Image (cartoon, rainbow over all chains, first blue to last red; front, side, top):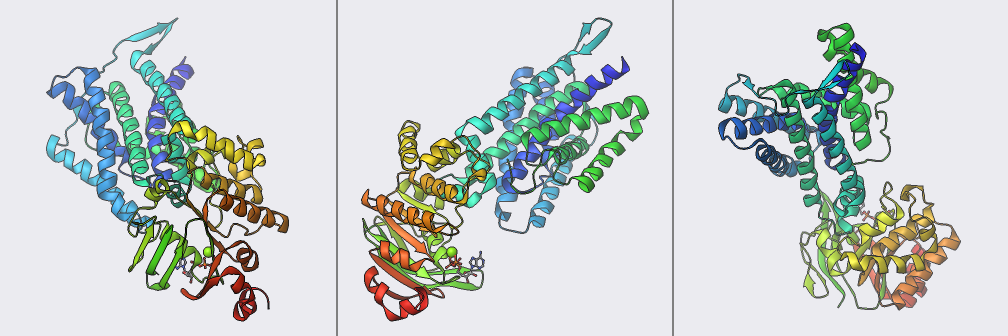
Length: 290
Length: 234
Ligand SMILES: Nc1ncnc2c1ncn2[C@@H]1O[C@H](COP(=O)(O)OP(=O)(O)OP(=O)(O)O)[C@@H](O)[C@H]1O
Ligand SMILES: [Mg+2]
């Protein structure tokens, strides 16, 4: 039973990592930037939902929708203000700016809401008993919603005009412009989608962990980044696979070894991937993907 | 006037790549730019298509000033640029590449244009679902041209379409250029293969280190002594 429950826990947290990793991957695909502020979008999304529910007494469903819109807008705004002016600068400037944005969001939120954690009440309380075993509703919702998001994203990227444009821009920005594709809009759209997925991840995360604080995005973001690298950064199926593998590895370490080792195992995986197959499991070296 | 380029100067940082260049393309013409490696041919095409911008002068397309236009907005006006090295989307399927070519057009018109391209290039039809990166060099060039035609262009700029192709395929590419022109498409052709370019063109401009040093009717350039010596192998 320990095995099964750890596996389910792993899939649950792994789906959250996967949603966040998708954001890293899509943004990397299109602007070749490891967006280190992406983890903090989760934090912003968590605070937004909390604020709408606890402070403004809005209906949870309305709060979730508003927070998704808020994060999408925030992601686009960050790109326009902080990253776009540096599009032709060395990658390192962009990376440092992303870290700066991350600090700005974390400390900004500490200033406004204090560094103290806030309680977040689970929006999906209760358990589903299965024989002599039970799964929490929050876990079921997390896995179900994540699967839906991934299916929707796959359809978006492979079937829609905007999705194809995203892939075209990722591969060859100039050639895409010659097709008449507005690259700026396509990049904004990518940030909006990535940030919206982070907001969804935020809600799911908060329901299981029921506590939010301004620095919560760092570790979550970092682990999702490891997941994206493990799966092959730039690859959508890679992000999903990487997220699940990291989640499961972490959960089994907690269950069978020790909770203290879980983070070490995750970063150990990162080092191993970088040593053995830097392109990741599903990544290819030559061509870029969304 | 289809295209009018007037006194452009283009820089890459401190490198002055294009110096005071002016030229025109009339509707229905085939005009070729010839010149050695690094003469500035691709830079001129990129400047016309809005990927680069000139510091001086102006560029007019169908009497509209496009000097400071964004590249993506020109496709809609009827300007199409097949860049050097083909630059097809390797990870997208043949069909998706063609759809990208028609990005600015209403969905309803895409099917007919795609049928036209498939008529012209039956090989592409056979491979429509194949990922474009797996096509042969010749097929990729067909796809690059087909993709450019999907936007229904009035002017097509081709940057070294024969590069790296076997002689038979080169002939085929030049046949396609002729056919397109007969169908009413104006063509600005950049080529290293100066002889074939001048044979197909109405007029030509000879470029040397960023300047136009000669311009004339194509058949007169073919018999010009200095052109013969420098570009036609004596
Ligand atoms: N991105 C760039 N940065 C700096 N210099 C460049 C760049 N692209 C081209 N140049 C320089 O500008 C000049 C013109 O280059 P361009 O590519 O237009 O030549 P070309 O005539 O197309 O040559 P080729 O026949 O080899 O394609 C060359 O001296 C080249 O080195
Ligand atoms: Mg060139």
